[in-house]
Length: 239
Image 1 (tube, helix red, strand yellow):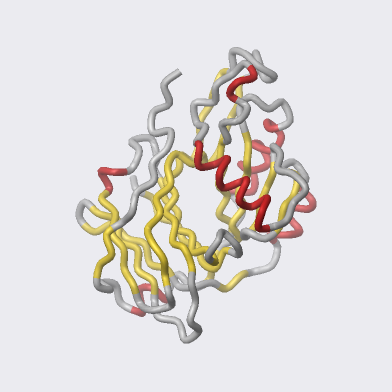
Image 2: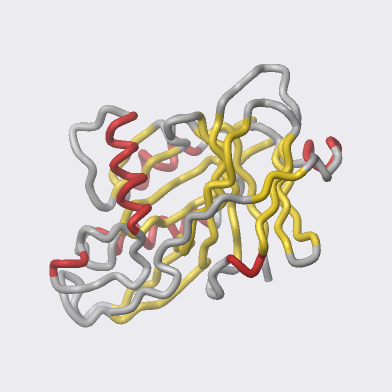
């Protein structure tokens, strides 16, 4: 089965800082970042998908569903599966020193692993407010611009842009979920490595034309190098 926009990973063009400090500072309070690792071929995942939809409606939360591809050879090919999703999940397994990775798995702020359907544990972990690195995300003509402000503390962090589809309904024809109709939320359709941020004021640009047609929202994640703690996060709607 063809997978449109199954994986995009491209560097952005680094610009001179174009957005003001005041504009960037408005994004300083960051959301809790909840990453769900899931698959349409996993019979344990639908409850976690439904929970992610609930979490996505909470204030101060950025919820993202990364569909992995390692279930695809077990009867059903997930059209939203990305090779990068499995790579990212395996990297968390290494950095968090987990005994294994699994579906459904939730990673919160790049630091906490929880079973994706464990409602109480997830809500307890996202309850407190968070401060983060100021990020300004804006549409400028045909481009997206991402501006990061100067920080006094030197740092080394990766900047990742995630394009996602807020909701989809899929009828499953084979595999463990055969006969079920799944409602899925905040489905990651593509990721873009924008570069490395060292604490200086920087602005990145990405052409809107490079984004998948079905992705209507984007998130920007600032993450400690080697995929560790989330340091900043911001979102914007494309249309």
